[in-house]
Length: 283
Length: 284
Ligand SMILES: Nc1ncnc2c1ncn2[C@@H]1O[C@H](COP(=O)(O)OP(=O)(O)OP(=O)(O)O)[C@@H](O)[C@H]1O
Ligand SMILES: [Mg+2]
Image (tube, rainbow over the protein chains, first blue to last red):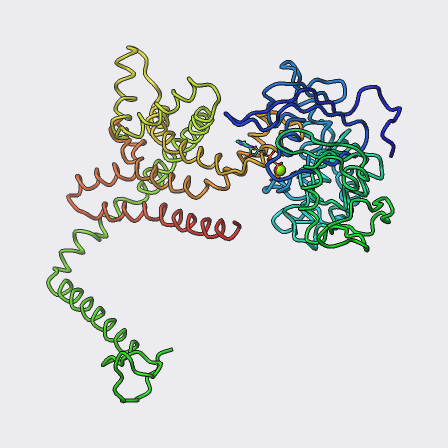
């Protein structure tokens, strides 16, 4: 997992001068961001525009101005065939959004069959393989309402993966989960990252961002305040606003920013805010 | 829990006992008395009616076996079948048109929305009978020499009104499907039309099956209006058939039989609605 790879000249996602207003309220105030083939975590306070930014990437929200490129395709071009490009972009929502009237297998096959025109047999084979990958083999006939939140979210990830996407967008995928179910979802996401999937993840899970992200983007008030490798943005933030946010999030036991974060053994702290052993409370 | 123990100590409002001031009767005794009075009233009313009524006459008027014999089997193989047929045709037409109007009302194209709203307001505001008259006589008047086949007139005449009601039900059902379902589908690359057909409408229909079943019940009864089109002996439905029999036999038995047959259709349907609603409430 390196930042600069040789796969292609065009970054997976490229955002230029993005503005988005809801009525008179400007939510995104000029965002420039590149996501090469790597894992980018977006953090920031509630209402800072993280979800809106993510939803502008696949044009679930139409930007007010600015450009969004996915690979070589300009999503914001009025002539862009959105449905075509969206097939390549998986998206996982905070509230899962599984199709409530379809069982797990149909949730995974319906878009493969109707959108990618795969045969039913092929789609089902892929679906079963993908379910296995997220640890849910054997739950094909269950309906979403019969699954726990963690299982639903893993099905939702599998539903995206079954489309063989080039990149995945995650909008706080664990925020709606009971604490004991967060780990299983993060574990699946770690697996994806380890396989080299390009991911843009909005998250409040600092431990996940620190361990998995190649780059962390801190947003506040509709702008990108700071970005860089996690050991810098989370471990040694340069901006006052980043520091204030992090100390709020990591309260009540604040992390000593000077402490070396990269020493954390990867995967040791799934699903919980990692607190360094030597942290000084009330820093 | 109030008990019926016979403690008789006087308790004022400030009595230190945890019982409230003791009434002369316990709650259970009062409930029993009230129920007793209600039964007594019922028995008296029924007895008076049974005593005053002329049973021989009533039976002659409402359960005349000879008249019943003359009604069968045509009341079943013609009248009942036609009632079911007219209802089914009007329902299918109304449902399809209702879906189209519901989608128009939710369209992003302004004129579609206005047209659909105007349609709904118009046909909800007109009596079904007037609409039937219009289809039967207005259209031939406007286009001389152009007459619709009878079944088409029935289907359209009843269906136009039903579509107005059903479109509102369907629109509510579509809007009740969570927004996230649409977003998930669009994210997977489904077009708006594909999303509507495979994701939204199936879920919307689950929501609207109970109210649509109610609509069938209403249509079953409205099918009795078809007589205004002028029907032949083979086209009569239950109400017209019963009325004709009433006229020829000068006896009320046909009304009773016709009414019972309507109930044979509508009661199971309302039972079905109730069961679906319970199941739906559980699934939520
Ligand atoms: N569809 C909408 N219409 C109007 N305002 C909206 C809409 N969506 C978002 N907003 C507003 O935009 C701002 C940013 O919202 P957004 O959901 O992007 O924040 P966020 O960073 O994801 O916050 P959170 O961490 O709470 O999810 C908020 O003030 C929100 O109220
Ligand atoms: Mg959000």
